[in-house]
Length: 220
Image (cartoon, rainbow, N blue to C red; front, side, top):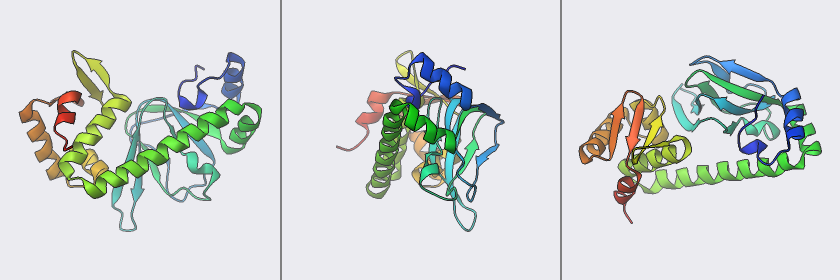
């Protein structure tokens, strides 16, 4: 098994073999639940392929998407701090994850210190992204938040393609609306404006964005 992702950066081949022996891969079909609110936090996960969304479900059943994870991303890291999962993790596409059981993770932290340093980096980045997202939601209009979200998705999951950034994610207008805290109709209207300006085009599930021109639309 070839390990990839921030959590495994800097590990020797012997350390990677040790991880592979105790951390199995598991596959999920599109739409499958990886963990749900109330589940025991028995493991953390490193996404090997596919896409996973992390969301919060309110008491009245309303779902708000918090994150979309791609290959190499770590999720479910709250296993060390909570007794029950507060969020829902769902496979947006067919995906494969490396499952790191809680007890195994604690053993790895003691035997491979580099994993501990990497884990601190993962937590710090997630906290910073959450704080930034909250600040942007509070102080920017939905059009600006959509641009910022497209730029963030492009940075995390995009590939350069003929001068544009290609984001090959199954991003429906509703998913984008949930990500920025607005309605599907508002996202549809904003995307129409961006297409009219020539900074966003769409081919099936793939969005092509002009990063520099998108940034220029944001207020100073």
